[in-house]
Image 1 (cartoon, rainbow, N blue to C red):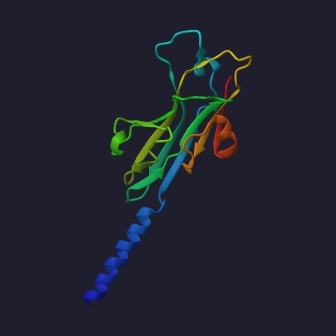
Image 2 (image 1 turned 60 degrees about the vertical axis):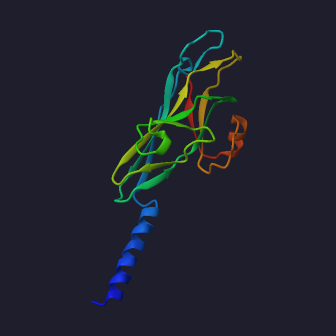
Image 3 (image 1 turned 45 degrees about the horizontal axis):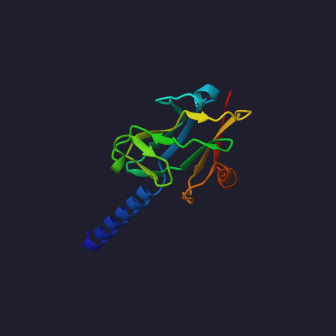
Length: 177
């Protein structure tokens, strides 16, 4: 067989492999969200001094790579709001391997955070959206819905709950009982 034919076949196989490796083919993401949250789980009385607040898992994002190539999954920037009250302790938590500076399993979701998660061939990674219990300053009524806004475009340096409500289309609402 001619060497040129072998080179063309070999180069074509490499090119096809690179195209498949760089595409989202074989990458699946699923989300599992809590059905509702009790008011006392989310808020504590601001007049009480609490040394540590509870961490609440709002949603689990599971990413499965069914491909023989490693893949990167783009994580959203997260803003969690109850009305106009923003939960500043929002973060993504997971048992993540080979994620650079995030090997301790904690990913900040502030607007300076990790934007992708690497998933090995035929592997699965899970990340949880977690908030910390927050003080509530005694308004006349407690919000009835907790909203998770997900900005996949990563186009905002910082965004308030009021802005998120009008600018970010992807959201998940969790009833507060």
